[in-house]
Amino acid sequence: MTTHSVLVLKVGGALLQTESGMANLMSAIKDMTAAGQKIVLVHGGGCLVDEQLTANGKEIIKLDGLRVTPADQIGIVVGALAGTSNKILQAAAAKAGVVSVGMSLGDGNVVKANIKDERLGLVGEVTPNDASYLNFILQQGWLPICSSIAVSDAGEMLNVNADQAATALAKLVNGTLVLLSDVAGVWDANKQVIKSLNKSQIETLVAEGVIEKGMKVKVEAALEVAQWMGKPVLVASWLETEQLKTLAQGGSIGTQIQP
Ligand SMILES: Nc1ncnc2c1ncn2[C@@H]1O[C@H](COP(=O)(O)OP(=O)(O)O)[C@@H](O)[C@H]1O
Ligand SMILES: CC(=O)N[C@@H](CCC(=O)OP(=O)(O)O)C(=O)O
Image: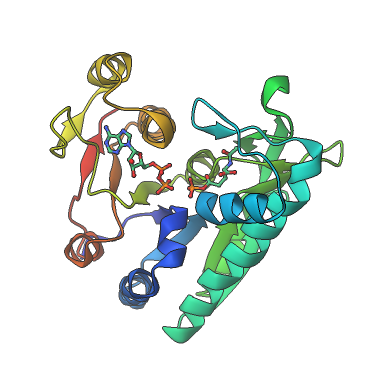
């Protein structure tokens, strides 16, 4: 197997509602870890946030794929992401025999977080800061499972899009980023997976409305890291066990976003 530096795997929220998906992913993580691969798992949980907001009578508002997060919603968002989602994944890890450390972007000074755009409320934008905490966890052979909740120097709890959270951590550890969603890759207008995409192709597909919503955020996050690292970022699926096996063997899966 090709051992990547550190593999930063990001999983979307839909995984957390799929018991078999989590079991398959954790089994692949266990195999990769046993082969010496260091892995950081970053997770979303947008669907769990939606559920909790609705249960509490709150409105769901998104702007360009990002959740508008007013002060009266942040507690619910933090509970759903840093609480429930994070612990669901730790439970799945434990079941697969993987020792994990549940954490958030607010831990160990790993990132710097600031309000992204006043119109979005308590939504954070993060930049890599200090890798010591993550490296310590990795050195123990443990799996860090990181939610996308950050804390600013001003003491605000901030909601960060999980693809952007994974971007910051991938830069922090100079890792290989793989964004795993519930689709096999980025689709063209006929819903066929595109093998490889560069910046200008992405711009065209976004302008045409073929890449939209959560996938627009994801592809733009992937492109940013690909350019920063000078190597491709993969957008693929946790749904397909075969893809996970190929990934564990060091192969390419889904759509390659080229620098
Ligand atoms: N061109 C596209 N290719 C693939 N998925 C797309 C595309 N445009 C929009 N999408 C939507 O983006 C979703 C993935 O983004 P998102 O829901 O944010 O994923 P996750 O929660 O896994 O991060 C897909 O399920 C799909 O509905
Ligand atoms: C600011 C912002 O949009 N935050 C996201 C964080 C969770 C996330 O990104 O979850 P998925 O990966 O499942 O989409 C949200 O509140 O939904």
